[in-house]
Amino acid sequence: MSLLRCALALVTVIAVAASAPAAGAQSAPKVPKVKTRIAKVQINTSGYVETRVLRDTTSDCFPGERWIQTNRYDFSTGGFVNISMKRITGDGFDPIVTSPFSKRVGSATVAGKISEYKTTNYCTGEQAKNTPAPTCSSTSGKTSISMQEGVVPKADDEDLTPLTQTPLMLAIQRTGGGRDADGCIGPGASQVTGEDTEKAVVTTSMAPSVALNIPSGLSVIKVFNIRPGQRFRRSVIVSGPCSSVALRTVSGAGGSPSPGNLNADGDCFLTGKITYTITPRPKPKG
Image (cartoon, rainbow, N blue to C red; front, side):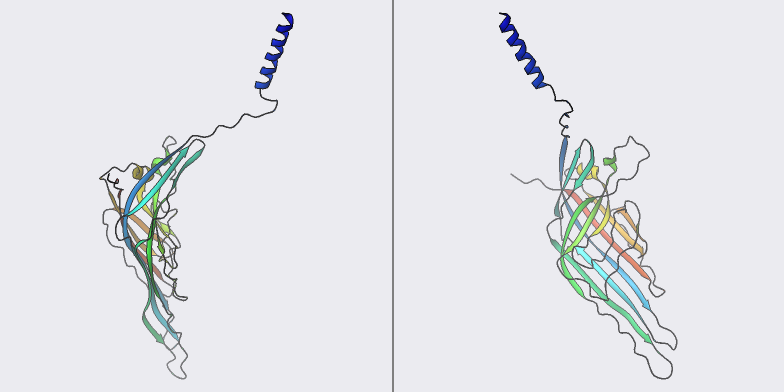
């Protein structure tokens, strides 16, 4: 009987030793809990962005040229287009919002032109050769849109949940068509000011896939909690010198941007207006 007890004790010791972690071994890391939520909405948008640049080297009795270069980008989805957004939350990382670009819909037109061309030259003697105005071009394609995550504003109250304040940006890009002609390329905004403009980009779509990125005036939580039958309409008013363009997002149709003035050589002014409506995607019948 004593031999049997010894054998059982040995087996117990071996089992305990096998179940104990080896010296220096680390326990397996816990897999973070990840939650994914999908928002299926529809967006209808249209608008334009326009830049005007003054070239003026004219002078009394001296060779020079003057003209205004205008580049304009007009776009429309032509109706509501489906957008899907995914929000991923979990332990150990900040919430993530992703949204692929929609299918190609509607229209997108880019046009450049030269106006008010005139020249000056010597008052007497042999005339110098003036520089001709640049040649501009026009092109067209389709429109594709997406909702992108903006920059979370810094809250004074640490207890506030950042996700409730995360702004959404509306990204609009032209697909198809060509590029602006060399010598007549539409400039964009060097700096953008206004609320939620840290990631804003204002452009006349000098080439396909160069996206216009503007604040939507809506937060992530507001869009993900949108109810059936509910809709939001926003307008973004764009106005200012190309060196510092101001964006203002308002509810409803909004007003018209200030056209600005061009007074001296190199002056550049940018205007635009973008309107959009967002609503939940209708549930399929059946």
